[in-house]
Length: 540
Image 1 (cartoon, rainbow, N blue to C red):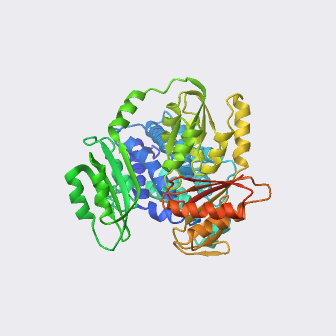
Image 2 (image 1 turned 90 degrees about the horizontal axis):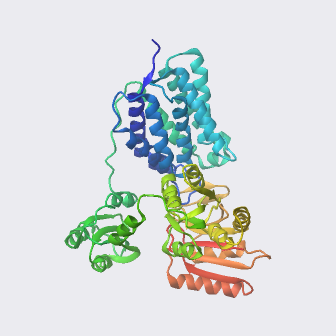
């Protein structure tokens, strides 16, 4: 009897791999070459495979491997976040296709699974780049095919594939000069190697890696408060960020007070900030307590009971089409969300840099849109693939416009003309967003050598159309210099959206300086409220 891998082993391998990549996600995140605070490759891959692990935990030991593979692929597809997460889900779709109806996986089926997964992943990327997760997956699949010719043991074949993936990862800097310059390997490739290595260990008889009991930090705050979403003992979900007036540890003191006026309390702090979450009927009291320890930034108060009632009214069924066209936009920041709503967006998916929504998040928004045709605006290059995966799952026509920035998304919305048909609107909206020159002002999340720039953590970065333009020490000065660089002789409009960490007075000073310098242009400044980016700039 030929050796084979059964459904129980497959489930254990996925669950253990999910736990390991979750444990190592920060190390993978930090491999991202571009030093802006969007190092989310590890986090995206972790959340994608964790979605699959959750779907497998209740399956019986005797589950056929074909069923386990199908559940894995389906859960990964819906939970896929970011380009790395989508590619990971497509790689495991290969297992579901090859193993359909199978009770076990032998060497030849493993070979076919990897081959089909790689083929699907490459087809999904318009311009595949070597030296990435795609290369690592392809090299693993090629080695598996070679190994399956000489061995009928899937454990040997998988082990060989895993070693080939590691070797391919080590070679990625020779294929991508940016990786070599930064002294790192590809982040997505590293994530895949971690997953394959752990699956190989489990197939070899190892024990499942225990789920991490993560220490609560300011970085993991949003995940910690997420578990309270369904608890409505108090009406108002209140969150805020407090920048400390003086050094010290205050979390216990704040938590003790908040527990007197509400529940679901989470307070975490580091040397500089305190993040607070509480459900209460007295949000003003919570904010007042925060002010005792510093100044408040990014406060958020939501009426959970009202939200719950609105959700019940919507019901679980998809919205029935009531109009020809609808719009779903991905955005973060109260001001930006309001602008998209004013422009006609039916549904806003909260997300963007560092918080990529899943395919299922985008699909839910599409289904809640009461339109026959829904245009989706990802507004971030790392969300486009997740949005595209939602198209085949929807019950109506969906068109993903490949907007790579908030500025492009707004321009596309403004170009929509209800008197035109679908094809004409798609063309005009695409033309409109492709004309936009987009700029961002943010900060360096880590030290990095990028091109000719020696970047230090905390430096202000000016980014023009996805590429680093220059670094600065002062935010306002950086924004002015970037606009000056972006404005051409054909420019007519400049739009500046200022973020949550920019004061109204600083934004007004920048606006005045731009009006004085570019008196012939129309300068529009508005509060976007976006995190991460001090300014989002568009020139048309």
